[in-house]
Length: 200
Image 1 (cartoon, helix red, strand yellow):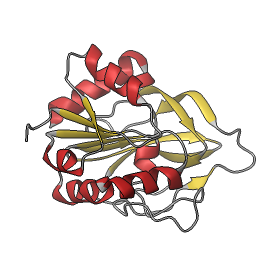
Image 2 (tube, one colour):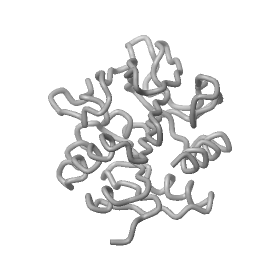
Image 3 (cartoon, helix red, strand yellow):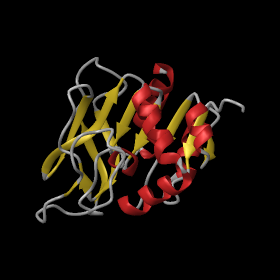
Image 4 (tube, one colour):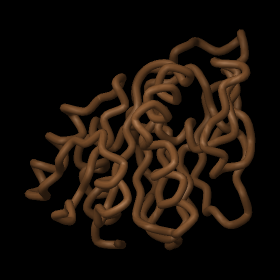
């Protein structure tokens, strides 16, 4: 099997075209896949997501990709999870009670409080620890009604706020999970994608 440079998981509900286009603008070959063997073998994997937690988890499990993604995470292999992609790495979400996530990240995804406008749709500030990894301070594009407010000690968090503080991104070596959409975040997002590729 040919080792894909960047394999982008087809979740059945994703911003696939914009992710592929973002890497294309950087001159980096990326290909969509639903094949768990490709996910296991690829040099780098991107898990994008737009839509409902339960629907995406059922799609990943049905394709056999959920296990392949969990294996990559345990092995520390390069992975970029975007928006709902970050959320499915957790144990579950209030959006789809009873549907388990991959369990890679601790915590449960929660809906923004009633006092907050949902979805959060637009640009928001990302605050990153100085000099610690791929994420830098800046402004990113978000589209989310649910959020994570907990960071495992082994992951380096960046933060944002929308009525409440929430995790904007988590990094552990070559593994990066972003609640925002780097592929829609202009030059700042393009630079982040370049740094992630260079880091792995």
